Length: 231
Image (cartoon, rainbow, N blue to C red):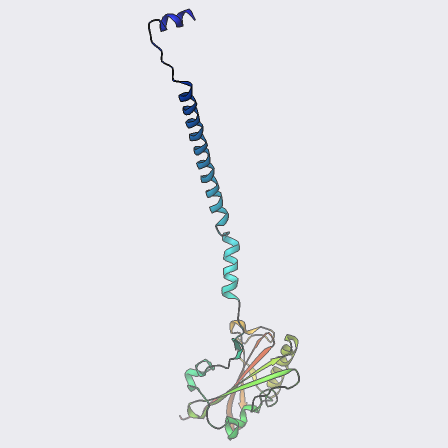
């Protein structure tokens, strides 16, 4: 202490007042608290941003599921959807138009649409109220007297639809039509456009083509009778 006293000898030491010391201490503590709060806020913000970010795998899977989830191709917004003419098979060949005149079954060529055992499944007029099914049909006319019809049937359940589709295929085969290469198996659901195609010759030498498709409890059968050969 003697050395300290010697060093301080002759030096005027002015200490701040007690009140000023308290104010300085309060300011230092306030700065420390502010710094700590800012740091915590930054950490929480970073943590919060990470929590709110979508989990890549799960969210991607969810978006993919929504994008690829199939809708009923035969009913849209509660309304039965028959094929637009341009979506009927062989449109590029026969240039279909929805038939607005007499039913195609009113002439000899139209009668051939039901030749291959399809008269029960695909009636001339729409059916409603039949046991276990509701049916709809749309007819088309093409160039060179080509005719076509789509029949849609909604069954009470999926099992019945599967069974009826197999019955249709059995009938086609029994009447001489043959499944074309690349056709889908009987039990494939048609949400991705999977169809079974059949072709054969009917009376008069005309070619009858049949395209079948199932979606859940719905079955679609499209019959096409080729047009006359002008060559």
